[in-house]
Picture 1: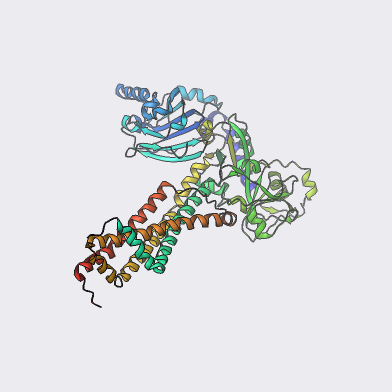
Picture 2: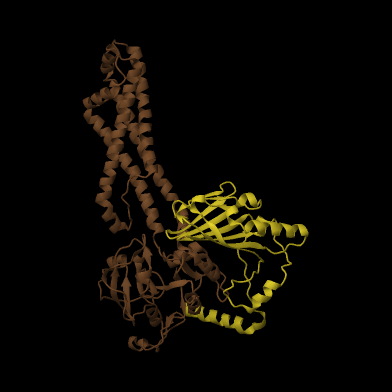
Length: 199
Length: 424
């Protein structure tokens, strides 16, 4: 069984690799799950370094998910970008942790979004240039690096995120620390997270 | 002359001493119920912890595209099957990424008397960690050195009575009764692992090359007649695996966890999933965890029953104690003192029961812990009661005191009505 599945699979791979060399972009089709009102926040803590990654549907952040067309829409995207550039305003950390932002990167990703920069897809260069003028599901993807003086004090996080973005209802929070991995849910009704047990 | 309120606890004690046997039995009943309640709590947290510690030290598990729970179930718990295999090329690609510190392949699909056979590398025995980062230990023998060596888990060794050096024949596919066996290429037990309380106990570990080797002359899932390649010839062949089922990944820095997870989930050449084992275990516990609520409810009911028993005991003795009450009243005790006396009595009984229950629990924990660990792989931590447990204990004492008010009220009314005339 293992072998047959494998050979069938490699035939498929070959077919994809050689029969459609000019249209690799079209040959690869997949869609990630997309739930309006619900985003994901990833928190990784190591020593006194913290990295945050926020993924949220455009609907949550600006209220639409196509490329900004009107001036009003463009202004909203700019405003959202401005807020997202300041992670400590949307995820309020305890002062005792003494965290400062060392890097913040906010991107709007189209549905058939560009791939991770580690991949060498020549096509991606083109993709990032072309306009996203379609009725897709754009999402915001922000990555942050923080440096803290005492990361152990990060016990409580208040999510002002919900105050800033009216469309956001909930966030799944994945946390990785030296103690292990855990998963939490925060929502508009319960916008705080207690990390006491995992730090 | 009035009876000072301060004398109430002393009176209660004296009165209880008068009925030492029934009082002792009541205390014992409460103690057992408290032991049960706290014991269930300990087992509950122990089970949750043991479950969450099934795998630790692994940052990501990589497999074919599927949900996190499913991937966890088939790769770690060996329940169910993979949706697809992962090609060796993809494994290699991921292993070469700069964030990756180590990667251990897992190949499943064969079985031995109903126990799963896992093809892996010797590194597995160093990298697979459970329960606060403990590594696997060998009860006998060592990791596989030869192509046809196998390392078996504690349950496998116990159930099938294997010793180091015994030959075993792996069956193709799953299930305890198999029609096609790899009889031409028997394996040899090179090591037996200590009990861990994880699915490792029920696994036969072989090298990835051995998995390839026992399938080398097979085609389409069946051995081909006239194409028998002897075990010795196999050794000379290229046994590099072409596919695996899943892989464990360890990272140089935890900060890279999400970046690598994203890269693997978006890996274009093959649909793969990378899941965080800790988060997936937590999700899985959410599903099976309803049983713990049921356990907690049952033990609360046991405590309620014990308190009810205490109330019954005090109520039944009330009749015999009318004279006692009358004497108290005659020396100037107010009806409210009688009320206080009985409620205090109930409170003292419960307090003694709770204290004895805690002592019993820790005695039982010390006595049974090694046995529970060895038999069920359940690690029960012996530590001071948590604030939650203290709260529960305080709650029981208060509940006992309040329950005592019931007979106390009755005694109060009786002492008012009876006055000093005792009708017998």
